[in-house]
Length: 221
Image 1 (cartoon, rainbow, N blue to C red):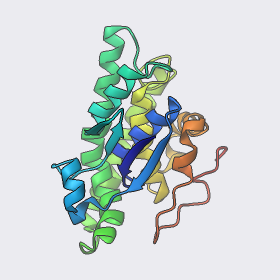
Image 2: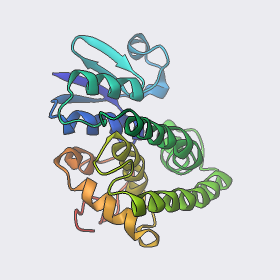
Image 3: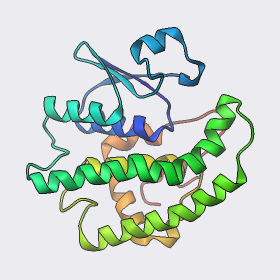
Image 4: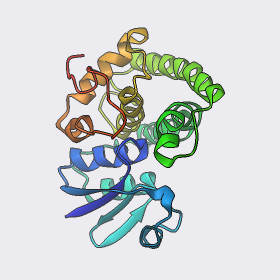
């Protein structure tokens, strides 16, 4: 069985979990307190970051590389289009959420509110929280624009771009940092994607010290 070293609310870990689940790859989840820099974990990934996946006898790190490997070795169901231009768009959007959205929103909200407490690294920086709250409005607006022109974020079929976005938004939704009423098109998209069987384990996550809102695991929220 595959083994994934992860942190439950990490969007990069969640993206890998969604990819594995969509392709029906059984995986053992091992929660890793990576910030403690455990020597055994550093041997698995000298960068000291999650996710780290052991699959096919290979120890893998970096979520983008992991998802590409999964896609190449388990091509069905496909999460990347065969068309080169469409594939480029999927990869662009995955990078958008894992880099730009992560830097402007996730790191300002989730990391300030949750990670600092878990790491015992002090209190949330109110300036960062306010900056993240402003930035998410722009990103939700951009997602709305995409969904007004496409069935899914990158085109007419669900792809890894949708999983990357849903991984970030689900983590933020756990701490009630997504105003779904302000973005009905995004809410409809998220309701559709969170209803997939691949999302079940993510909706079952429980993080000690943090209670998700009632709608978090409601498929018809």
